[in-house]
Image 1 (cartoon, rainbow, N blue to C red):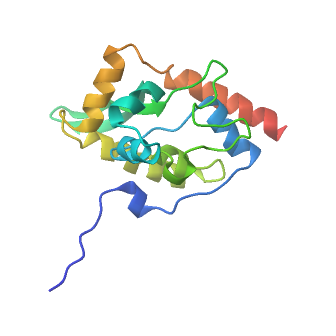
Image 2 (image 1 turned 60 degrees about the vertical axis):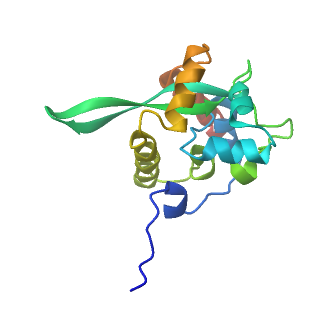
Length: 176
């Protein structure tokens, strides 16, 4: 019997979004999306860099806090993520002056699979899948090793809360 192996990669589970409206671009200007395992290697190859060279363009983010099971019941857990560097004005390092993503073809998961038009349920399902892909990586996976290297070098992103506040403010300004 020929069974097709199901992919655990969220990129294979969901349809990529393609939106370049002002609200979606405002996220690129305030809160660049997180990478999932495999994204750094894909982006590095696209830019003809090694993953080590790409690290100069990435930051270690404190990531999301989620509820997860433990021996003591459900507890809060932090899932650390890797995000593109932000310029001084908050813009993603990959957003060019024409407000186009210079790595659109290989954009990080949180950039290419989310937009501001999704309902909360869709966004939460996609986010949970992406965070699960990170959380299930072993401590010595290339993703988690890269996060630690970025953090040890002091390449840390601002808090998720402060980036989210900037994104929400920007979207509110556009919608008003």
